[in-house]
Image (cartoon, rainbow, N blue to C red; front, side, top):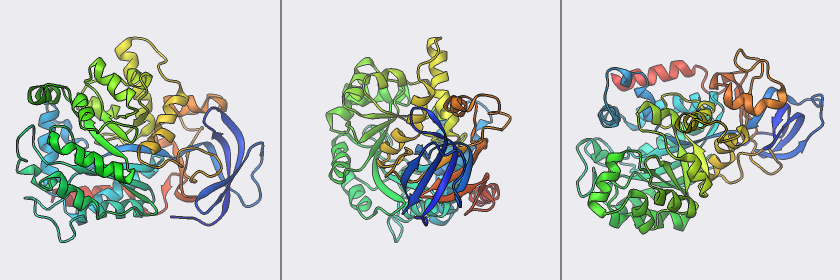
Amino acid sequence: MTATPRTYWLEHAWLGAHVEPGVALDVADGRIAGVRTGTPAPPPGAEILRGLTLPGLANAHSHAFHRALRSTVQVGSGTFWTWREVMYATAERLTPDSYHALARAVYAEMALAGITTVGEFHYVHHAPGGTPYADPNAMGEALLAAAAEAGIRITLLDAAYLSSGFGRPPTAHQLRFSDGDADAWAARSSLLKDQDHARIGAAVHSVRAVPAEQLSTVARWAGERRAPLHVHLSEQTAENDACREAHGCTPAQLLALHGVLGPRTTGVHNTHLTAEDVSLIGGSGTGTCMCPTTERDLADGIGPAAALQNEGSPLSLGSDSHAVVDLFEEARAMELNERLRTRTRGHWTAAALLRAATVDGHAALGWDDTGVIEAGARADLTTVALDSVRTAGPLPRLGAETAVFAATAADVRHTVVAGRHVVRDGAHTLVPDVPGALAQAIQDLRA
């Protein structure tokens, strides 16, 4: 993934607190070697990035195969639980080869949207019926290869998924998710290794999917490796009710009791929380990944993101089910959802929302040296056009506000990963026909 030394000239650059015009970046060994401001004209030989250049975006929560559900699940009515049955049917058809083809196209779509790192919450581990593949991590390795071929970084969050509910065995659809118990999950996951473009993390699918007495095994595995640990948390009120019935406490309280919460842990959704839950999550430094487009698509509800952040929970963003792949939409949706809920405006600045989409998102995925434009950071960049029908008009110094509140993924002109152009002038350099690749992969999956 590392590119040869070069210089990029950024017409406008977001440097974390303000927009700076005329910035030259010297890049070597995939990292930013120097940041030169006050450079009104491109240096000789520099690659020119017209528009507003941001640090690369981090998509902190993805289920790549859900991309095959786009539009098909919008027919008729229902709930999260009826949607889940359609999702299970799609998961049943995945093979290592078909998942690789689909994920490669999905990750290329992400690159076109300015995403340079994805957190893949991965739980489709085995063949239908639960029989392991000859390579027990064939599905995970397919995802790692797909990200490399699409030119982006990945944190594979290998998920323990052992139960269909509190005290109940996996259903027929869920057998391919399960390793039997957390020790077997840990043994298999330990075979996965970090790569130049990849980090290996862990996930508890949910408190309903991992028996309480096995939660600490997953937490210990992640802690020993200093790896990120993610968990779907209180996405549905039914999960909260079942947890109280089984354990006499909320999911957040159960996770705290078994050592799952902490600074390397991220709760995904964190939607239906009590005041005590919010304090537990924030006070432990546990992060919160909001996925507003999926949460509204599935009628989940609006989580208390502002309250969680105020209590100390860092925020990140994810496109989750990929109803859309657009981190700008996720960022503004978090603010606009809070406006609808409270009937007041201005809960986050554009700078704060960009932080969730960049540096804090990368930190949630274990990439602590990514997500900023400064010397020593990885040279991952996203350039947004300032002259499209959506972004034209505002002053360049309002670039952060324009990116968050006006731009869409369609306005991304360039995506650079480790100093290498992955998207140039709106075209993917490694996957020539991304729409065609998506269409073919989804058609093959349905065949």
